Amino acid sequence: MNSKPSLYFLTFALLTTILAPTSYAGPTSKIEKLAPCGPETKVGELCLGDLNELLPKQGALGYISVETKEKNLENKSKKDFSKYIYENPIPFVLGPHNTLHPVDHHHDGAAILKDGKRYAVFKMVKNWSRLTDAAFRAQMIANHFVYLFDENGKPITFDQLPLRLQDMPDDPYRSLSGAIRDAGGYTKKETDYFIEFIWANFYRDLKGDNAISREDIDHHFKKTVKKALKIAHSSLSRGLPGRTCTDKMH
Image (tube, rainbow, N blue to C red):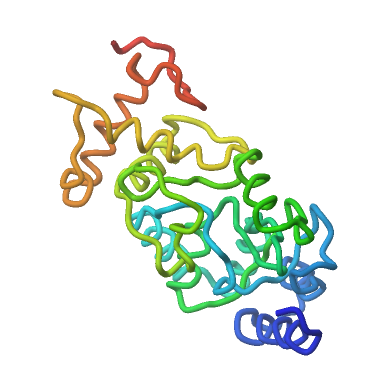
């Protein structure tokens, strides 16, 4: 991805395989002006990226969340799809050897791939391409740009992270957490990376009458979301980030 011919090809491929030619002055025309992601990209800038080149920085995805996003994308026109990827860029860090490391929106990337597309709009958060591998990993951890836990909430190392979005295992509790966020159970700021996993582990660890099993999520998702939302709006969720309730229920 570092040679100029490949960068030019990336731009051409994105614009010809994803975006339909239009005359309106909207996201499509803005995307056409973006350069491919690389060492020339400035921090804070948007660029065009290949989703297959992303190196995930979390150990799992919520497959129900990915499938929901994919269905949403399927129903979008090319114009609306262009608008979506422009307004929801994937934040990434440029690492050693010009590697691409997403710090959020792994689910969006996986859904776009599942929808049969390969390219999207990215946004550079940091350029750490000149760091050594060891220094890069240390900075990623220090800045909370990586979530080193697997689909069961167990610790993993950098080397145990999935190598592609397509290889990421399923964590049903992450799907539940995402649904609770969307339902207003908690809020997330733009830079609150991986907050959904904190809530996922909260639901994973509940005991007794409040316990929620993987089977509950997999087979009775809507019913389980209702139960989990009540718990989010109770005193049980006290201390969790983004919490919105006022402790009136318990």
